[in-house]
Image 1: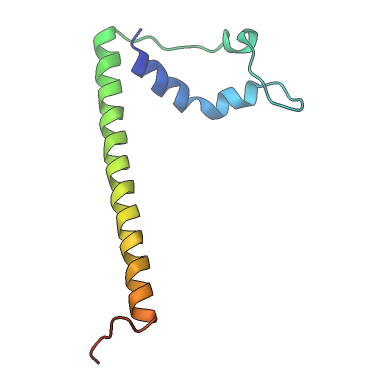
Image 2: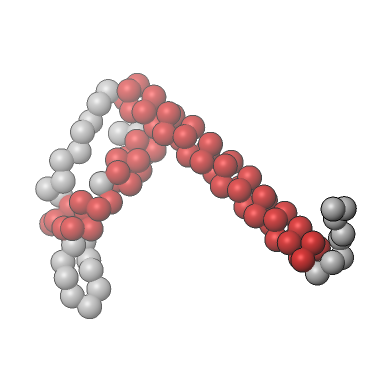
Length: 91
């Protein structure tokens, strides 16, 4: 079983697994509850391809989030400079 494939499978089933958890002061998942979860097991080669595709998408999402964060920081700096009059614009 390819670990990255398992990771993505369980991430995709997060809400369903949370629904299985036992209520109390803290929600808990026991081995008894988890053992009944059906796990699709495609051939190893297919698992690797699936995990590779999903990892690639994760990498793109991370890159976009980093770019967005940089742009937000740039905006904050521009707002500070423009709104305080430190930098003047020609009208």
